[in-house]
Picture 1 (tube, helix red, strand yellow):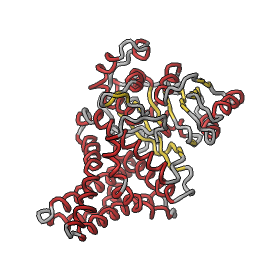
Picture 2 (tube, helix red, strand yellow):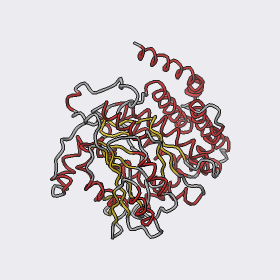
Picture 3 (cartoon, helix red, strand yellow):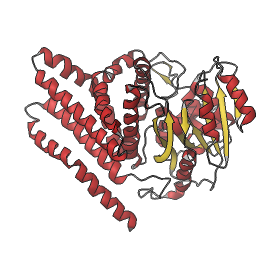
Picture 4 (cartoon, helix red, strand yellow):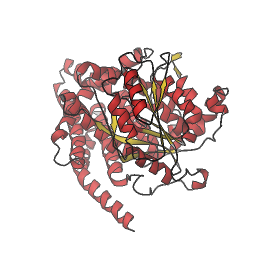
Length: 457
């Protein structure tokens, strides 16, 4: 009864806060016949924003703190984990001498009791290996030293091949975790056997360094607290993010060879994409048998063939992790290009089955895909073609819509973080995304075969 009242109150508050957006929508809707492309696109984006915020703030619950309301009808289809399952915490690293000690110490400092920490050094050449060797003598960690550079995906798969945990957790080498972050994620899996994986909640560690880091911190908050929370209400989080990604062994183990051997457009896809690994859990009921047949001789399949299940994937807001984000323009752009390439590749995989997971997950997923694909065309249409035709007002209207959307996300940040003035950077991030980052999509597609060793950020 108390839970029902709490959800009812949250729905009313969310509707009240979103009412001004609804009024804007009602005012603009009759203008669609006059400017179907301009007004129609703006209204579609506004409707999507309203829907996502409404779902995130009125329906999301943290699976580490209370039992989820929406669960599968037949929970008997999902085997329970032990009350305190063994967890293997994996980290692959190459040339991260600046950050690696803090990261490893935060992993070991996790307050989860049944923990195996496994660090894989992918032939570092900047002193990282020596730091790890010293840490291995001091701390309870297993250090796997590769004598040949394999790349991040293959390094993690090497680690997974010797991992003994019922749960496999991953982090990135420039991250720091809250002591209770891993425990909260594991608790969510134990309490909800239907969850095959969960993502933690990430913010910027170096938030105060530059304008870029402040803007990214606000963006991270929205992507996790709103976007992942909305997807989590349907059990269909589409990206268990690298800073803290926690999987049940039986939900992901058979698909590591497919991840390592992933090919796209006739060439190996070398990026260690979080989205792709998540996709194997989301879609294994429909693509799992085919993938396992393709790698039938792999020890990951022959050791134990786990049944394909319609796993759900959640998001644990209370599991905090912080990551170093790019501080300057050039590394920021490189990161964004990597993300765009991962988006393109994953759309061609997850997009083939996401419609099977239900109306809600499908709308969120395909709506986001259409928005990303349309963004560069809309930017050219409004910021290049329209001014050339004398339509300066169209450009102003477009930019106003971008700022409005960013302000909405900024308001959501301010509600979650009262007293924090960084909310004002969110409209700036929206402008940057619309005017610059959206144009990276065609470039990323054209250069998608280029791959380097990189973190998943």
